[in-house]
Image (cartoon, rainbow over all chains, first blue to last red; front, side, top):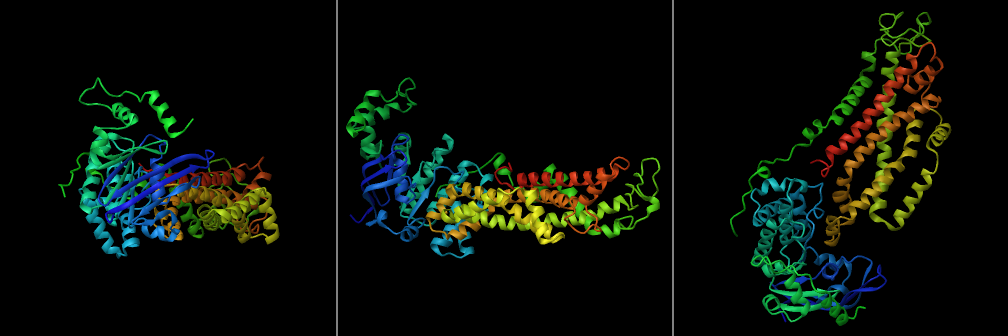
Length: 286
Length: 297
């Protein structure tokens, strides 16, 4: 078990805002070192809640009622805020969903990239700047010098997301949580960003928890996948076996719902109501 | 590593414009700022450029009309008041008090309001509750009455006027800055900075404050306009500087009594006051647009 990076066991949580509605029901998932695991589900399935729980940024209205989040055999949920802060941005990093709000609009890219390196790696201002330049080159930004001196609004969405990927991998973390990093981007840019994340992940040997609602993205980038519905794990396993030989009717229906570029007349079938009905009964929602 | 991507098209030619250049392309900044700058030069050089001594009376030349009307006397471009004092010179000297009060009081009010607003918005909890309640109570007092009361307590004079404006108007800054801080604190980059353990004070000064500066600049400029008006009000009721120092408010008060046979005595200071306040407001709006990295596109 030495190569196990992250182990979420029996995680349950309720939302106090919605009168104690369960948002996570006994969720378990694991991530090996260097593995990319997709965390898939519809809106409200709880995939972002899991990501936030790992990062320790759950909103106050969500309360964890049971379970563990073991990161390298330490329970993140039981940690003091101070210990958590020393891990976050150092051993665990985030690629956020919205590159628009994740960068400070009033500071230059270079300064923002250098921040993490100086705080977490103790680099001098000069060393951090040199490293930041190198990182921008690593994420295939052509003229890093210009980007370093730019403000976020002067960059396109794809460029901003590259910067954020550079920032996430800057500290050489062991776990990167990617929270729908391509949702806010054009489809054409999406693919480049996915390849980039995969390449960075392979180069650094990083474990990635990839939150998305798109099975197509999972097929492109993930090694394994966990499928959620209403806070419950529906299906789980290596990507190939789950996508090619789905065990659960809901998974099959979801795969059928995706667009088929090879057969435009097929696909885009909404998930049938019976399946939702059966799912709710299975989970125990009225 | 694979070969770097090549960016062509508009993005490749794009160079961040300098802030100064952006400022000069903003007509509001150009006109508002130009007028204020002119006023500033006039205020500083008043003794050199004023055609007459603003206090020199000549009862033989009382209530002269401006130069373009019949009966005007050469050298008195905007006419004279009932005591024969040169209106233009008095206006020029009046800008000194007006600008001094505007700059000093707006800066002090901004300083107090911003510090308290940032603390309230960022630390929340009891800090916020106490500061916000004080602001609420403060704002319940009618401002003009409160300023008259304050000047009456402190005694008249330019320092009392400044103190009164600062004491009343810091709440303006506090409220807006607190709201802005709250809005900024919601954004992902602040969450990120907190999660990785940046010191809270450092997040406030390095991450949040710079993003509030555009709003702050606009507020300061607006506040200067307000301060000019308040100073005029207090001079109008005779609570500002002593009556032998020319002020726009004092001139308005004097002109009001003579409106029927010397209208220019009221119109001239009113026009200058109006233009000044307008210029401050335009400058504030323009600066905000020019400095705001999100609006500047």
